[in-house]
Image (cartoon, rainbow, N blue to C red; front, side):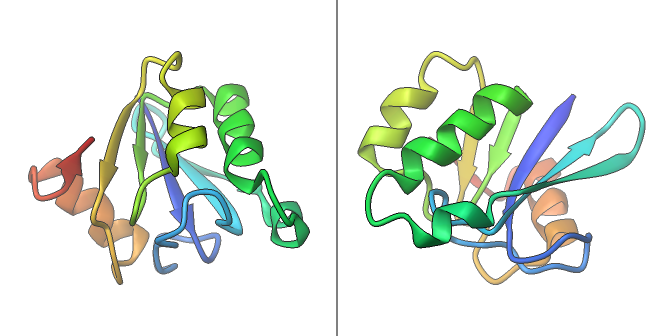
Length: 112
């Protein structure tokens, strides 16, 4: 299973980015291979509008089974993500990616 995190950095020790659309990195953990893959999403920082839609497009390319983020996608991005049979979990604020993963595994995050 592939789990995507919105992140401020590239490692397990990085802090979760509470923003979906403007997250600088999307870090994907493959539970089967135990490997992290980093997707640079920093191009959206300069977008006046449409950052959430651009990040949703990246999710279509990555095809994770689960997305873990802070606040969750905005309305437009959420609509775009509906066709991606992916579970979305929120409330991973101020956690490292590793802590967010453990919170997910322990059922402590909110599914939207």
